[in-house]
Image 1 (cartoon, rainbow, N blue to C red):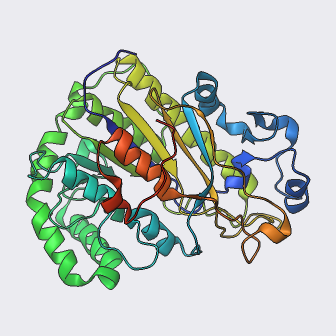
Image 2 (cartoon, rainbow, N blue to C red):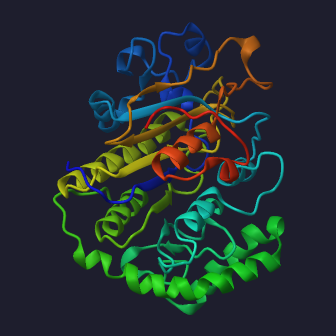
Image 3 (tube, rainbow, N blue to C red):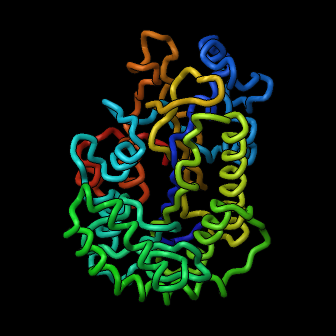
Length: 379
């Protein structure tokens, strides 16, 4: 790794569906864990021990090495007060920092506006990898390229053909119009369409410039993490790169033992490959990757899986990350749980955002976070 004077870059990986934090960062010595997880409890001897009390899921070895290097931050009990158990509403709260009202402006859309107020980045100061546009990146007048596949990128999607493009735009409209209004959606698409086309031309230059000695998995997460590396390494000035794991993949109501292992095998391997890729290019010094999910899962398993929960875990990895455990593990005591048998969050996600915004992106966090939140000192 080399020290550079380049601007800091934020990569965000959203784990769609509600990751089971209890089986991701595991309190393997807590008797309540064994009581509540008779079908899904991970054997203590298989857990990747962090401190004698908690450890990572056995499939997370590729991320454990960053813990060993002191470059992996683990946030325990992350969430927000009065939790929603709806995927859409909870993700909206994380995306807009608006837990009490329906927000229209994404926190990262506001970041992009602050970083590039005059659209000098021509739509690629922020880039999403995936179909549609996450609300985190949406803000009126802020163009954001959204790439389905970097090799075949077109307006809002990576699919070819006007009919399929129109279908994707219609999907974007149906997702957001019911809550923010069709007028806002129409204005947003009009204002960003031109920049998206320009952005497509610029982003198309990234893959031919890219060479690498690493190999990403042939999965959606693998493709998008590779595309993020290609875009970042092309030195196009992109500051925010966002992607989402396959839609609702972490919604493990059934078959969780095998599915959760497969999901974390995929995520861990490709995040490791991504960091290794940047290191091989001497370009890892000014990048952090933040991973989160909209909520956790119920404390008790249902025999095959787990239902929607509340408090969970999140991660940040990078050369400048001060590795460690941040926050305290929510109590599994029955009387300490949220109503319905869920972990009670004790760290507001906006505390982590505040650190990212102020200490990494150099911005005032209060307007974006909709309030003042104590920072978590992981940077």
